[in-house]
Amino acid sequence: MVTSILAVVLVLGGLIFFHELGHFAVARRLGMGVSVFSLGFGARLFGFTRGKTDYRVCAFPLGGYVQLVGESPDAELPEGFTQEESFSRRPPWQRMLVVLAGPAFNFLLAWLIFWGLAYSQGVQEMLPVIGQVTNASAAEEAGLVPGDRIVEIDGQPIAIWDDLVSRIEANTGAAMQVTVARGRELVSLDVTPRLQEKRNLFGEVKVVPMMGIAPSGELSSRELSFLGAAVQGGRQIWEVSGLMIMGIVKLVERVIPWTDMGGVILISEMIHKEAQNGLVNLLALTALISINLGILNLLPIPVLDGGHILFFFLETITGRPLSPKVQQAALRIGMTLLLMLMIVATFNDILRHFR
Image (tube, rainbow, N blue to C red; front, side, top):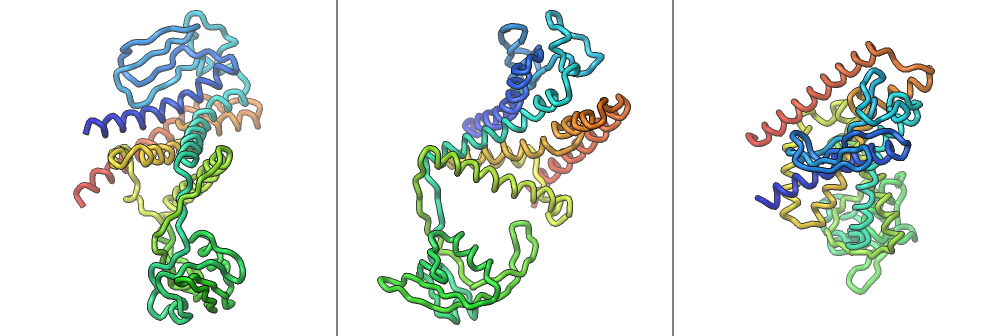
């Protein structure tokens, strides 16, 4: 239990801290003033001052914050800071970069984790070995049996199960010459995939070509070079981000029910579970949560980073900032929406324990 609690604090606190580190690093790089860089919230426990910034550790460890100088035009500047260091006096593109840096650092952290895992652990890939053949399917009628390893389709080599899936889904109704390794023999069979209904990751029913086979679950580990692991990390960022963005779209379209939403309680439970399964699993989950945090913060909702980026973008286009009344109204709407989402997510988390 102590390990799990420590894991939750380190993962959630570390992710938010790294997010704030992005804001801090870019703000200082552009010469903006930062009065406070805090690890945690609440009462100040200890810290030190370097330059004009108070670096502090606070009582509540989940997260942190960066207090920029002059965040609004009418804000008073702390002692020792000049007007040139004021955030609000900088051009919109500089303010946009500072705000964008938080989510960018979340993606950077996820990439570094994926990179390290790919280099140290290699890539786990599912082999194209058949584990199950559906009755009366195209595969059964063609003569495919469990244990067959598919090595070629129409003369094209099949190295992993994903290669097989891609070839089948690209089929337009023509017969495919499938070469399988069966024992010590190579056997060639003609298989014509059939259009069948299949549920995708989001529960939608799609009609796709299918053979009627399932994988055996055999895996192989492929080692990667240092640079190859970096590319693999980038590829994982792209794939995971695409799935998460699509998930948000499907949630808005109500393809995914709102009852599936989860909040901090669900995330904490996931961290607890993966902490029991070892450091590799915990790091992989940390990368996924970091990407999720980056994407959510980029949503164009006032209060979130994406909302501020939208304000600065509109200021760049129009040549003047939005009126304070419009900004305040948008922020109130954004805060209300965010609070409602948090309540729904927490309510769902509680209900899961009674199902």
